[in-house]
Length: 212
Image (tube, rainbow, N blue to C red; front, side, top):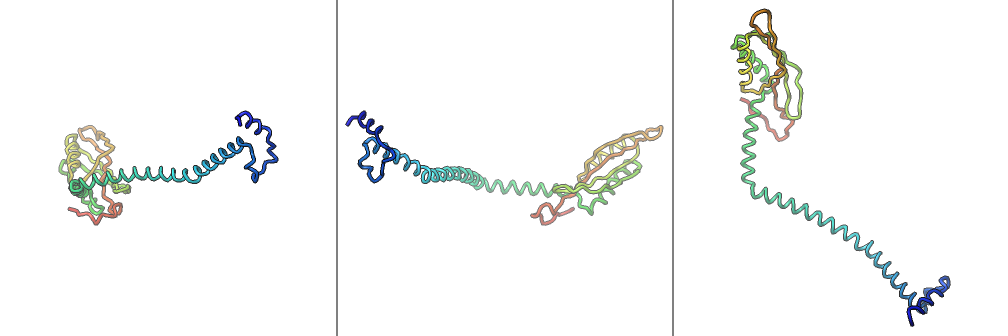
């Protein structure tokens, strides 16, 4: 039977009268079209409910594989350089301990102020005031600001500042103000100084700090 005659039969089919129980008597072209539609439906269902979830799982596993490879490379590098890294950590710890010793403890701040007073007197400066401000807590340390006001000659003031900067404890100097006093060569120096103390409670691994 030619395709044209099969197409004519398909056009003459009464669609309302079709019965699945009599599918064997349907025109051959209609049977073929139904088989194609059934195949496409089965293929779509299989793709949607079977292949798609497995494809998503495959993509997830491939992504995880990349992460694991990256982690493996990192750990392999660390393992190969473990001894060198341990030496670097020990060196950093030694430097850290040396820096911590330069930070005065709270109980050492009065002694630090005494050192600054002695430096002023050594350079023949008159101390007008050294006044502590309220401490300022930071993440890993506490900042202790204090105001200094001294009076004396220009060169003596310069030598005093150099002595303060050379102290074994860390002291930073800020907000300098230099003004003449009277008609002579005497100058008044006003400045804000800051020292810092390490907060042991900020590092839970710290077992204490060795002071001088």
